[in-house]
Image (cartoon, rainbow, N blue to C red; front, side):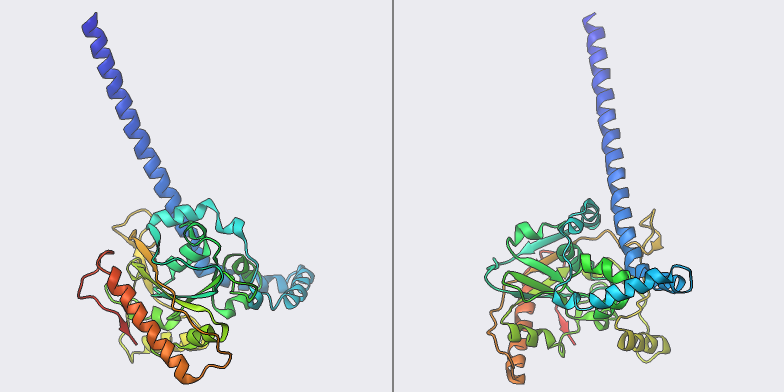
Length: 344
């Protein structure tokens, strides 16, 4: 009887172990599905929501619902200055569980190199742009990486193209997710992706090319407001998506550059992995880690009308600080000691 009980106990333990493994596999698969869906909806929003809203407007204008659109336009005109005044912050939206799954897909982590005094205002200069600035959105547009815990009493304001606020309906989505730095009080941090669309065209794996040499507007803005400059670098931003690069001078490259100059963003032809398999190509980003490092602030005096010499001085200081940040952490996050930043 004792032998039978021992066998039964062993069989029960084996069954329990198999059940635990099955539950773990199920939980892992379910979690990965949620991560994939959260990123997929964001990709579709990034690519299609603007054009869809424009098409919706066109349809409404020529339908019987045009009076509703007329009312919306009147309200939109009265609300025209909202983006410049700081937008409409939605803590509820920034804390959606969906963004936690979004963060875990890669995963994305936020690292702090220094404390930020909430008595001051800051300009976070984000690099690199990548294809979609995924790290910037996740870290500063949502609470998924714990910005408010890492930087208590600092309010992040993630910026976007001004033209995006001119598209009906789409602007209302953006105003809740991306909002501009206001001048009300202290403890504000505006996040600017410095390289913009021009840098996106140079995005490539294992390369670190920043469009920064002639980008001095953020320096002038910092001086005018007395806001400290904070270098931010996301290791892995360039690795999550790949793009087809066209030869300089070719008609395809010229078309991209012309589109970027006239419209404000670059039509990159990118690819990642498939929805169901990492072995196939698709629009889903690769599951590669993005580590966003927030460097030490550079104190900046308040100068209402800064001279070009003052702007150049702080621009040089900023680039030096950014290089130091990159070199100090590049090996920690998978780069080689020989890797360096190229500023163009």
